[in-house]
Length: 289
Length: 276
Image 1 (cartoon, each protein chain N blue to C red):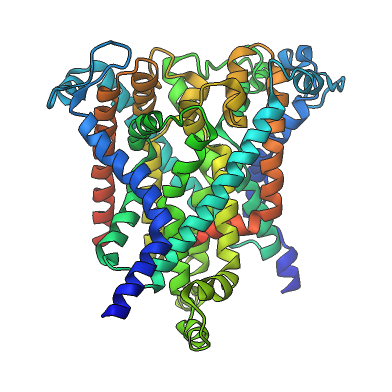
Image 2: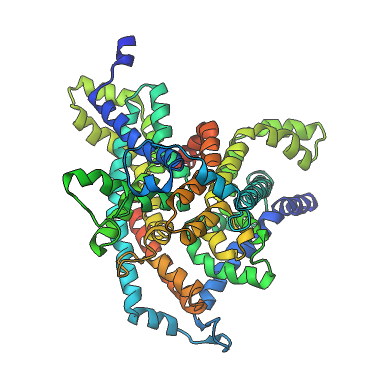
């Protein structure tokens, strides 16, 4: 007993620095954020924070800008996630058939954009998308095509998605490739002996066995998609006509341009609820079948 | 078999084309940064007609307005400090949870790992206010210290430590090694690969972190490279050559680090993507 207690102290001594930081910068902010959501606290006004119960949440539901931001976010997720997953899966399947050495090259090539910081990515793609001298329109000019990539409200979001695809497809591709390589070749050999076509064995062997990784990648992508910020901030700042102002961009503006901390905290919690809702649905999907 | 290896099918041609599209933009930043502005604004071919170092000279020589060396130094300092902090703090805690039978571990562990699901933005406003209370805003502490509380490294190392055979530690214990001694002399040396992976991963992640430094830092001379470069883009809006040169300076170290360590980086993604 005495020994066990001493061992317990020792364990806490090891874990103490991490637990301290974890409590201060994860747990405390979580609770603080929840509490803050029930307060009106505008740092620019001289009034102190005051408790307003559900007022912030009521305001959010009546706030047309909140709904627009939510819709913009959903539009981003609906466009970006399926495209990312399909592209990542196609690349992973393709890479899996290439001999090792060249595979390492392709893997590095497709992963490369992921290591580039968003401000550089943003600068680069702003230049590509520039309607006057951008690389895209300059290349399309001989064909007489001129696309308002980020200056037209209908084009701006797809343009952000295209850039996101380039920037982020590497991660899911690597995870899916690792998943593919975990599937024993014996399955495919048996299927081939039974005369299965490539498509058939992809549908009835690859996809089911890849399901855990696929769901994992999907969940991560949906979560990441709802949190989209850097692209928006760097390329469109939410414009044109607020067509790309996503939830995080709206939260950022609310908190750090207007210093409405209570309302921003409440909006953050709504974002968290939306993300949690979709994560639960997806984990359900994983358990079924 | 040999001929099989050399055969390049139509699928691989597509892969190759795709790879070109993925690499080209990165190379393009590098190439275009050597063009004078007139050539960037009137696009006439990928290669510069006239190679100039002017963009780089102007950026590097203008330390007053564009303290890019300062930003670079800040980024190196912050990312190094964060990597050291994360690796030391998480490895100690992960060991306590995996091996030392920490009391309360049964409910504490899922709590910690559960926070991996919480999007960082939810914490942004409260962490900002806590840092404000601590008086750390606009100091490197605001960027470095909170990173130590992240659960990712803890979780990754925990999974790894669990896989180390217990016999080794028991043998060391019989030899009269203390728990600390076992950790230092047995467990850490065995974990060099995952520790290095975590360090690289953390370094690249924090080097590229944007939202944190953007919100927590205020003075231009405390900025990290990504935020500095973003600010730069805002104020030198029309000068694409300068902006692209800044982008090159910002990207070069990461791309080099990636090319050197790409195996570790990619493996760690595959690992964390598969472990449940």
